[in-house]
Length: 257
Ligand code: NAD
Image (tube, rainbow, N blue to C red; front, side, top):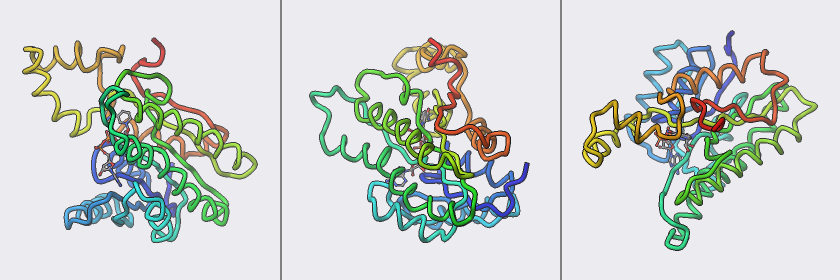
C-alpha cells in the first residue's frame, strides 16, 4: 500500500498519537504536515527528521486549533490536503458544578470545533483532487462516559456526530470520513503519570498499570501510537473505500464491557 503523492495534515502532531499517525502515514509514503500551537526550532526539526527518515516531504505549520481562523489557515497554508487527521486535543478533569466555563469553551474549541473548521477548508481540496480521507481521533469517551470529564466526553461524542454528517455529505464522492476511538494509549503524557500513580497507590509499575490505569481496558494493555497510525493507514487504503461514517475502536475491549 502506498500513499505516495498524497498530502496528509495531522493536527496536534508534535507528540503522542498525532506524531505516531504522522510517522505511519509517512512510512506509507505520504507527504506530511505536522502541526501544533508552538513555533519552536524543535517543532520544525521534528518534521525535517521525519521527512529524512522516510524520504517524503514533511513540514511543520504552527496554528492554534482553539481558533477557527487558524484551523482554516493551516489547511490553506498546506495548499493541498488529501488526508486530514483531526487529532489535537486536551483534557480537564473536574466535577460539572466547579468545572471552569472558560476550560469548557477551550476543550470544545480544540477537541470539536477545530475539526469542523479544518474539514470545511479541506473538503474543497479533496473534491478538486477527486479523493479524500477525513480521520477524526475521537476516543472511547466518544462512545461511553466517565464522571468529571464533561467537556471532553461531550466534545468526543460531538466528534462522532460530525464524523457521520461529513460521511453523509460526501457519500457519493470518493471521500470517506471515519473516527478512530482509542482506549488508553501509552503516550509521553500517560508515561509521565506512571511514577505518581505508583507512589499514590504504593504499587510497582506493572501492578499500577494493570490494576489502576487500565482498570477499564479489559486487555490490560495500553494501545500504542503505532497501532493508531496503522489504523489510519488502513482507513486510507482501497480496502477501506466503503467504510465511512463509522467508528473504529482501538481500545482493548473497553467499549465491549
Ligand atoms: P498529547 O498531549 O501527546 O497530544 C496532543 C497534541 O495536541 C499535542 O501535539 C499538542 O501540542 C496538540 N495541541 C494541544 N492544544 C493545541 C492547540 N490549541 N492547537 C494545536 N495543537 C494543540 O496527547 P495524545 O494522547 O497524543 O492525544 C491526541 C488525541 O488523542 C487527542 O484528541 C486525545 O483526546 C485523543 N485520545 C488520547 C488517548 C490517550 O490515552 N492518550 C485516548 C483516547 C483519545
